[in-house]
Length: 117
Image (tube, rainbow, N blue to C red):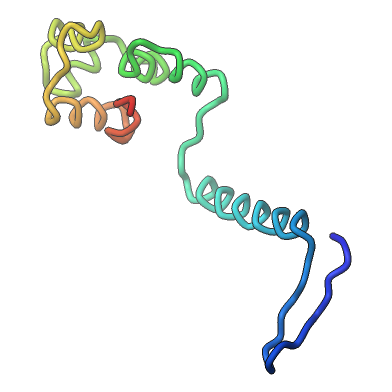
């Protein structure tokens, strides 16, 4: 960190630092917050899987495979038929919000993780 200047203006104390030092400080605080969430048990995904999600034509299939589930296992966990889940995965059907919520719950992800915005 570079030189830090302390100033008093109108009786208030201020610290003057370079923009680079300020950005480093903010980055460090954000990194600490992220590491705290990870330490508290928040799941992280490997880069390769995140990249797959951005390129996938079916995020549900990608998460299902990542979780090591068969299509039958996920359908049973979500309380829907295997053919219906297959149609959702292939894009033939969209699935209701309720069904997508159940699929997300069975995959242990947020609904937002399944829906590309």
